[in-house]
Image (cartoon, rainbow, N blue to C red; front, side):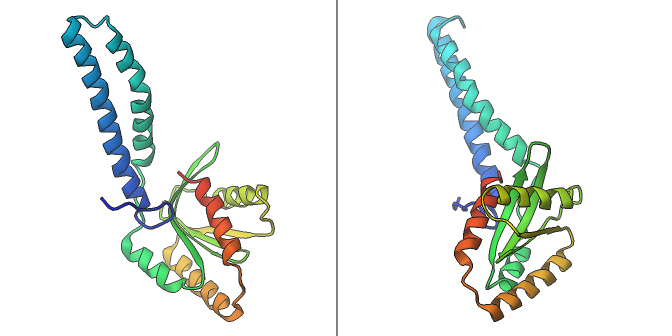
Length: 192
């Protein structure tokens, strides 16, 4: 299984597979430790049972990772390629599950150009205004103010905005790549 870095297309599916494999291994180790102790003493009242119970903590933590990521899928390869093709002069990040205290907001793609940030989510249940406000608030806290953040759930509208932003970035040719990379890093930090 090829490793996919956070922010690249396919990350959610990759991370889901890794978490499932890790969870299975952890629970198999817990079971093996328990049965090893039971086979030696013929009772569950032994030190290996305690080790197995304590070993359930990381196994359950891995299971929570599986459960929290399970409903969400990666952006399709076709959409990722279309966005990448239309955003040659922009910074693009993909496959995010942005979390706040109140909500979990899956975002398929975000493109960044200077002070403009546009995102796309195919999930109809996502509160677009709340998601944009949350991202803007986190960026404000990290010293990036006066940013325009919009989240869309219409793929064609998003693609049209990306194309327009790319045309503007191509004409202006400002050197904002470092700032855009920092903004992308902050957004990825608030994402699972």
